[in-house]
Amino acid sequence: MNKIEIEKILREFKLKKATVETTNARIQAYTDAINNPELIASWSYSLGSRELGMPGAPLRNTSSTVEKEICDNELTIEIIKEWIKEDKSRISRYSLQVEIIEMALKALTEQEKYIIGLKYFERMNWDNIELNFNNQFKQKNDITSGQTRKINDHAIEYILEIVNPLKNTFS
Image (cartoon, rainbow, N blue to C red; front, side, top):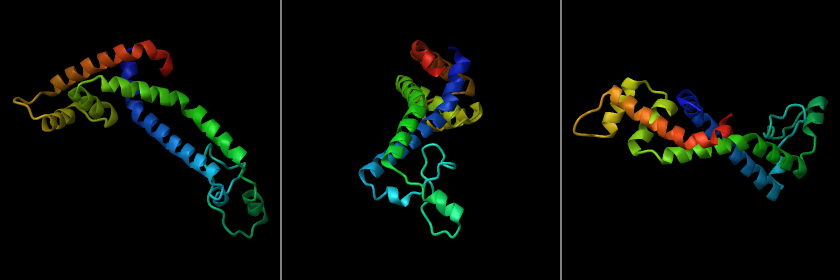
């Protein structure tokens, strides 16, 4: 693994973390529904239009026989358990990747984390990173964008050391 690959992984981190958190929240909602079947009755279910892991819109009165037929599919606990299984399978690699990057970020200094966050998660340019850094870390002397790049490079090298033994997780 090299610097370019780590930078790509860092740029994708925020989206992957959000995907994991959203999917885990959905899994929790499904688990709650299994434990409280009254919740299931408020979901409609269509075999042909279901987004993976997503319940349909709430049931509504309809006069269309076709729509009524689609809405009358019975949503069972077995189907919901299958959704949970699919969701867990779909995010398992993302979950592991997010966990590895979070552990690597914990190994950085506060200043390194701040610069990595601005550069890869907030996607700021070096001039804005310099301004934000100097506002955040009031020091005797302000640092330049060149110095923020050096801090970033050091942090990337350190992340590489941590992540390289686990590089197969990211391929």
